[in-house]
Length: 201
Image (cartoon, rainbow, N blue to C red; front, side):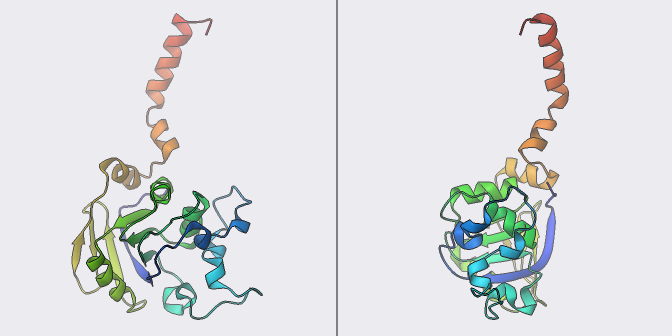
């Protein structure tokens, strides 16, 4: 999993509330178990017409936000069905951080397991970040995970909370497999001892 330390990037404003996982990646794109290739279908029904043409008004189709790495979103982001394809699609597009007033629990957990940092902020802070994001590509927001701060393009700094274990995993690029491999020596030692003391097992 890619490490997350400090990110300075374009933030796309998406003030809609209750953006569910089917809006993030519609069900017809869930046939794959590959994590790559889903970015082109991120927010598919909002990004494209039925004949596949881009909808110019959608934020990620606008030139200023085509390379956005941060989303500033409305309340209850990631609600709906528990599809891991949702963070896969965000990450494949290039989104590494989502900021909102609240997230659905399963989506929130899946983000951390896939190298995306979901940040919960009070409404008044999200409003400031949303306004900053609306300035376009010249307004870069900085997210510092180690310092647990978000800094606007004009230097306003806001702190955020994050679970210490999840922070450790993101900073070190550790998913569940990576965490297990950290214990490889202990696992090998246990298996060697078990083979000697319980050869029948």
